[in-house]
Length: 86
Image 1 (tube, one colour):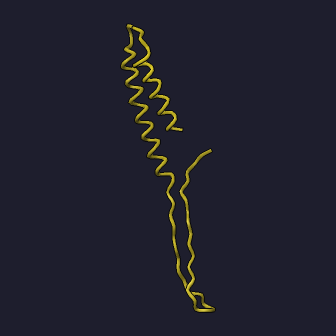
Image 2: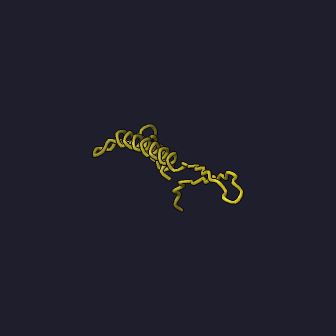
Image 3: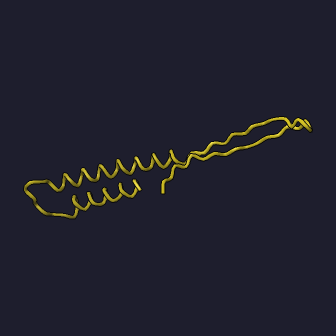
């Protein structure tokens, strides 16, 4: 969701900077557009970092000896840290 929000902020900022040619005396629309574009880039990068952290998996292999037969047994456990919230 934050990746999409970053893209939307960037697009709205680009529209204000490059497509809107309106002079408003109390606010500079070009500066507002540049600020929105910068905020969009920051939110997009934070979204990418959080997405990369979310998709981590860990694999643990445990080896033991079966007491009845004396043969080595190995058990592999894979755990995923998927923090998706629906």
